[in-house]
Length: 296
Image: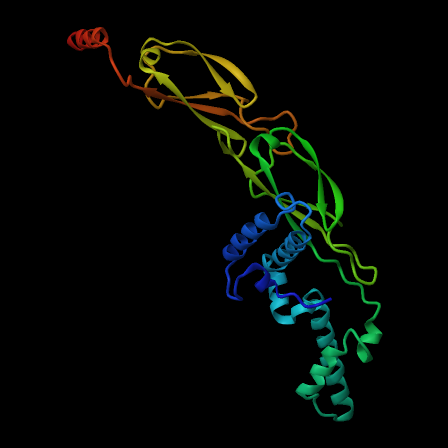
């Protein structure tokens, strides 16, 4: 397999911050997403490469290994362990026989042969854990109000996924063993899914609590009475007190968002009243307001 420059794939340099990498990944993932490029094999390949690059560079430990070992970054720990064992063997040999240190060239040969001939032949059965895969799933806020089942396609494999109600934007869940295959019988890596939740509703979400502004006309605020408002799962009737002030907040217990992995538990809905003044008055209305002003 040819070496892929992950920095080049994402269009960032080696000094890029995690924020730079995340921004570049999201832009390219959207651009090459299979849903937006049906039957486009080039876009599909680029989408896979972009995800692969993000899996490595967005993880501090993986990125460190990649910068040090390049295409063999997944075996970085094995390299380091083998180097340690080689040093220990060398030191033992020196103490017992007075032999000299290996030169720089010897160490280069040692690393080159680690997974080939020589020393590598004796480590051919070393088991390596598979690579973790990272994926991003975009959903609407309404999608995570109830528990849903989805089928994701990752590296041409269909994975059935149950998304618990109440999952948060940016939350990451791990599906064990659904990452890259292990080497020499080693365990598979995991699949890490980050949720990107788009809120197109007129509710603001904070954890399990919801917030909403409700506009009142001046007359309703002054006189009070029954009003009907929309909650996330339906309409409710409220009794508005006379002389309700602008900015008044009321709490509707249990009318918020589901609590993550707590069946039957919901946060609260906070309603803030915003009073709107009339944009235009008739002559009669103006006269009545003038009379009211005199009474004050």
